[in-house]
Picture (cartoon, rainbow, N blue to C red):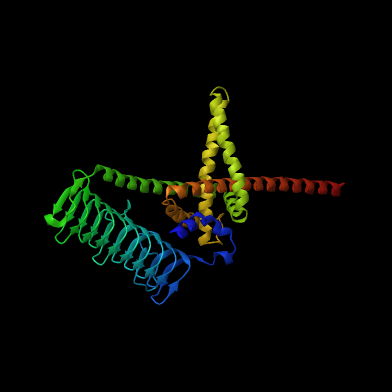
Length: 423
């Protein structure tokens, strides 16, 4: 886990390190990613697959994947049985799993934490030694399902979210479920917290802990002795689950906002965007220093002018400086997202609209995963991103200004030479 958090914290540094130092990390962009049962991957692996993922072998380090949601096949699937947008994990995974896909099947052995998000469905029939978080929900998929099979064992805590959730495995830790309809089968050794309109408990279910449900939920209990720990209404846990959903919605909104801003930024000023990305990749420490100075200057200026008063030119100047601060913060995130995108496609030119689009999508996937980090790690990471991105933009503006002055000098010299020649 520590290695995962450290890797995410230093993600933007990987793009500027020599290849020899990045040998333990693998970044892959492909149509269909396959690892057979006889293969073992030792490096931390990041995969951006446009078609499907199928891992039958062993992954020694963290595995982070993205299989974009697609409404229809765009071409032949290379005679593969998996459909576009699917992810099948049936191997052995010795470290953390993070991923987003259209449909996800988790049938392997997972020895650390698993966090996955699906646009339509998630099914699990494997062994989970750590915590397990699975969300299958999307505005374009109102029938998203999440199914935990009878062969599933979750030794850590579990958070499950979808429209319809069915749990039939062995859940050893605390289980939290948010859905419209929930079926609780199998065995639950810890407490179960459910936010749903309908909760069904069939025969054969065993809940050793206490069942907490939201007020007003419909309970269908076929075996009165299934729950040994008792039943309680819990608006607190319901509110907590609502906060999780609100947090997810907020994260998606942020990512969509950055996507729109990034496309506008690359479309309006492609040269500036390209130069800012180049600055981060070649002189990150300088970007950090300049970014820290710029942000501190803007914050102090806003505070000083705000305390002076709102008369005359002070108020519009304060608003202008505050706007500059806010805009630099947003564009700084966009620059770093573009830099992260170059990890998947280092040869892509950010000045091309289609290329910038691919970089934004790849970078946003990583950004979406990173913002689920604990606040104690996420906060300094976001500060660093803001400082580095802001400094890169300032340096890019200075480079552009210097190029303009240089071109003016050259034009002046050429005009002078022509005048001397004519004379």
